Length: 364
Ligand SMILES: Nc1nc2c(ncn2[C@@H]2O[C@H](COP(=O)(O)OP(=O)(O)OP(=O)(O)O)[C@@H](O)[C@H]2O)c(=O)[nH]1
Ligand SMILES: [K+]
Ligand SMILES: [Mg+2]
Image (cartoon, rainbow, N blue to C red; front, side, top):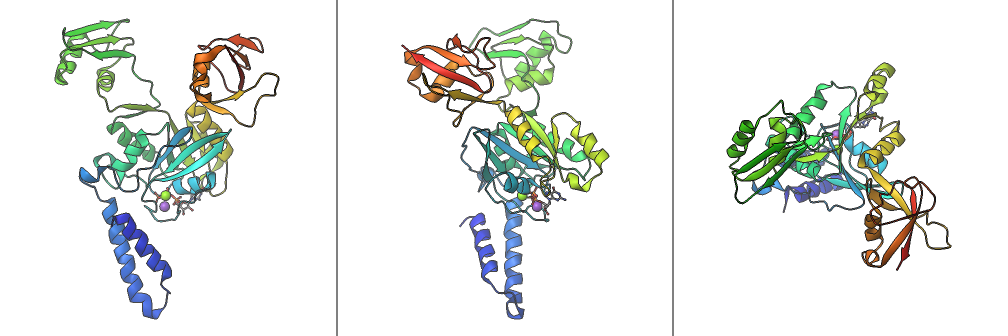
């Protein structure tokens, strides 16, 4: 039996047991056992336990958002407020021990929101359930760093450092470096702009350090050595990150105003349901999702059922998500909306669609 099952069993037994003088001892023992198992779960695990019990949640819906934060900042309260799923919320730390998925229904999209255990300093080294939490964060399309508005700003830096340490880059574009490993031919280095932070020698040294002796490298921006290392390391992920300051019901209006003005930040109160609409709107924007409506000839567009796509998607992408056989019989499409000059406009497969476009596919 896994630790999680043991915990669940003890919790059930505690629930079943009447509280009175006669059961005092029994209950005390159960609680001690519970605490022991919870501590075990939070202890660093060896290579074997890396995956982590209770973290293997299937990806589903149109996008995935992971909630990262210190214990008791209100992650579970947010999940329980925005989705139909109830995740246990309490004033003690490490209430949540596994990954709890919920679904946000917004603009016709299903956004998977993942509630996770709180992480602490040293998470990257495996403190608490840090490793497992971070592994889940890597699979997300958007990371929400949730912060307690009543606590110091240091929390934010600590969390950023933990994620940075395991190769997660937040709100940073991928470096403009082309890199391709080759079988032979040595190192070919080139740049399309003046370089002030590295030179060919340093690039060679770094590549050799990584035991790379044959490769093509082109700097398209005045990048740093760190950015080169990011490019050649395969464990780097670049993710958008939204900072959510919770519990604003506890701080002054001046402080709320200051926090709200920071980049990529939203202030909320989960308990008082303040500003949650704006949080959803910002989430949607940062996920870069768009809605496309389809239309049959001579019929009204089907506004009840949007196709959810990423910003930058083309008519070809839209066709694929309608049905994979469509592209083969595609003649042209008629598009109404923001992406076209005229409404409707005849477009080809490469046309880039925009939010709320209506599309009618004309077949051969
Ligand atoms: N004042 C205030 N308290 C809040 C708010 N949101 C959550 N809380 C309280 O903060 C405490 C922790 O909430 P949780 O949702 O359990 O926090 P968590 O981040 O999931 O905690 P762990 O699972 O232990 O990491 C609870 O006592 C909540 O009632 C809020 O907007 N304002
Ligand atoms: K808690
Ligand atoms: Mg929780």
